[in-house]
Amino acid sequence: MTAKILDGTVLAKKLRADFKTRAEALAARGTRPGLAVILVGEDAASQVYVRNKVNACAQAGFHSEKISYPPEVEPGLVLAKIAELNADPEIHGILVQLPLPRHFDSDAVLKAIAPEKDVDGFHAENVGALMQGNPRFIPCTPYGIMKFFADAGIELKGKEAVVLGRSNIVGKPMAMLLMQASATVTICHSQTRDLLFHTRRADILVAALGRARFVTAEMVKPGAVVIDVGINRLPDGKLCGDVDFGPVSEIAAAITPVPGGVGPMTITMLLANTLEAAERGAH
Image (cartoon, rainbow, N blue to C red; front, side, top):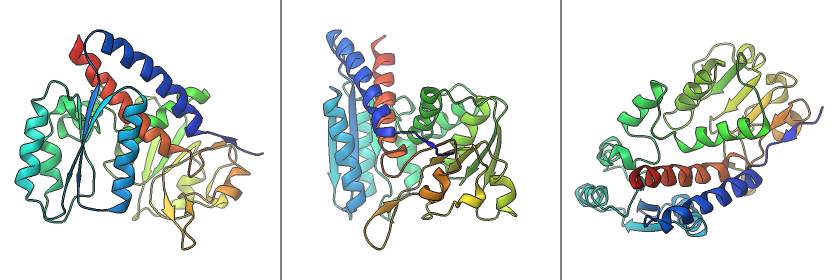
């Protein structure tokens, strides 16, 4: 068996074309979707992510603002800017690029974003809504993964799903979404005993650990769907995921590559959330 490749670049392109059409329809009624991205500091990876988000907005016909601060900026200045953006009717989504410098209280910053503009889905109010099964915004990476399942016609009802990782950004919301789709969900983490027992019975395996090629072929049930959220840089400069792609793709039914899998979908679903926020505001 050779796995079907779930191509995030192709799916993202298809979805973004639809978003552009919806954005044009909204603009014709006087509302242009607007996203503000706040970047604090000079982290190279963060700068790339922000640039990609701003470019994606431009291509989809959205308005975007990039607001940059030096690493030593006082948190009060950033909080004041967030308050200003909360009140700006032309901004429908606000995103603060993480990680923030150490002198920031990240929770306080995320809490300062108005819940109806929290397009990352990290505000406690939005997390609670997701938990109750009535989400306002779904965190972008899990949202993109659910789109993979829908596009490929992968049935989740009654399936055994295992999520490796328990972060607030991916692991926990991913588990919630799978559960709401009627899968039976197990979350594994660094303290899990007998990891092999859990992963080998997974029909759906989502790896979000941040450990290069951690998931080997012996850990995967033949015929499983494997979603690789990880992105790790090897000593030679190449990128790889949390899954040992070559051997695992020989036994899985479907798999996401790295790069070109989950990554393009994460930014795409940020556009989706911003567009949905603008559409709600236009009604």
